Image 1 (cartoon, rainbow, N blue to C red):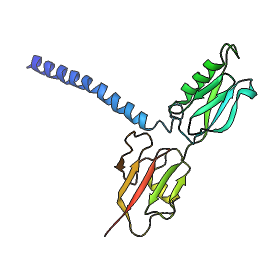
Image 2: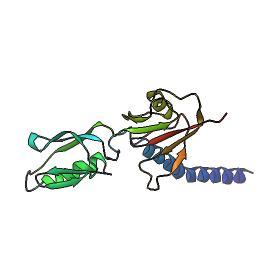
Image 3: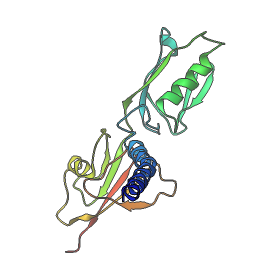
Image 4: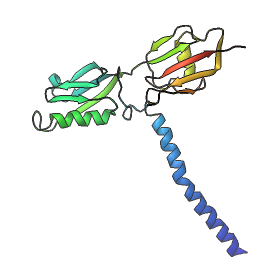
Length: 191
């Protein structure tokens, strides 16, 4: 009986250990979805306003630079494409461009001054573009847009993520997260 119990306990331990990678993967996915709140993992897009600081070189720094549609930032060494890059990746590209021909050991820092806006339309009182704020939910986005109209449906709300290559609308709840560049549509209720 003792041996059977030990074998059962060991099999439970092994089964529990097998679950650990799945838990870590789920945590990693949650971390990816919250990357906007961690500006270091945030991916830059058209309309973001950034600051690029090159330590000790004010003429190479860029302040309040709004990323254009092309996503290109011009430096004396050439252009750097910033769209889709994280802040760390952009820091590295700028430093690599400056290294050698301009500076021996460039120290570059990139920060976000303002996120690109999100958009809300449909059955809200003031459709339009609104400045993104980290941690904003659909409920808060609706409040920024002046609230819901009388015939708005709280169950028929859709979001189109800027990061979705297919540009499909997905149903979202009032407590769902909003990200920069999202387009939220609040449908009309018929009852």
